[in-house]
Length: 476
Image 1 (cartoon, rainbow, N blue to C red):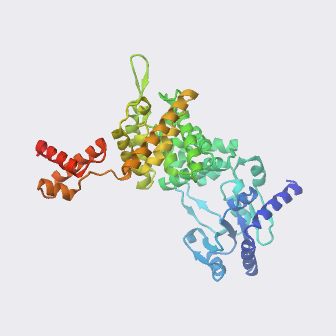
Image 2: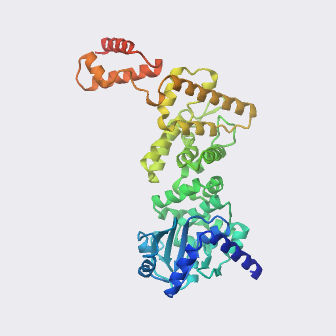
Image 3: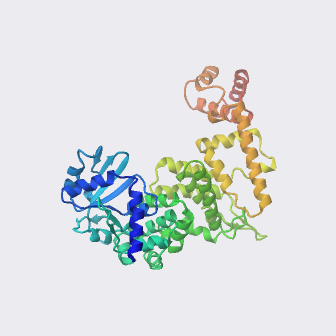
């Protein structure tokens, strides 16, 4: 690498570092005074060179955790030791979150992900153990000396994901790095080095060694990236998706009956892209919406049927897909609130179709809102995202129909509280009117009145009492 190229990289890194100075340099001087090295390292250097350094800074040092902790105490506003077993001490200073890790030279047993942590003695050994070359660069503090033994700067300039050593050795040590490569491709819009891609394909089965929780966390970061489609395609093309999300690859063989795409796989990716556009415009990536977009059609392979005329149908695929989505998300250890929200969205994503034909009554609109509950705003976005037809006239008609539905929801909301559709009589009133104690009869009467409320809208107390007496005469 030419000295001019290196100097330019140094200037870029230093210019970005000035944004967090004097904190980083001040910390470097504290370590230097104690005769220890300190380097900004990994993703922090990569992001500094890309001009996107955030408020989370990673450092490495030859100091051991006890020594690091002693240097941070009295200087940092807060410290924590949750990563001590991996040689990491955390600290906070002037709004910056700092993590300082002792040089490491880890050894893996080749079976589990858990490394046997062994402290290293040199910066280069520490950089060699890192996942990718773009994360294996360092800047010394306070001198700002740039270190790049594995060509990370070249890969950064080429927008390429490579590994410090042989990809097979890197992935053999930690198979999660294969999924991380796809995530970085999605986040940074970088290409995967051919040797790295080949190793990902050949070793994809090794991902089964990784716990569901760690796969879930890495996959969520990929799905929330700026370009999730690049990452998703990599997962399918390399076979990694087969290990933890086989439903995604299974979509490639199916036909989408709504949008006339050659396969549901491409349709699904387009829906994810559309959803990403909606949530980004509304304040940031939405994991629930993107998961629902990704999984909304996974029930199609199981429900595919070919009629006598050769037509293809996927009846009730939204219900089958909801069950499949629930099972998959639980297997990946997603929290219950996410599982519940995504499952609801998948089960309701087809409900809108037919509205444009004028078949919906006010009752149907109430049920749409009531069934969606707190997911209504996301359901609006998912339904709009699901329109991927290339037929401009049809796309405009569907958008117009959904505009009309949202306007109708707003109108009914002005007339009644759709967010809390409840019977016009509560349990106490039901028991008093019918002369019954708490029990199943009260529950059945309450449910009848709720259905009546959805069907006809708000009733006066007199009307509700009359309807309840009629129901009691017929059912008690």
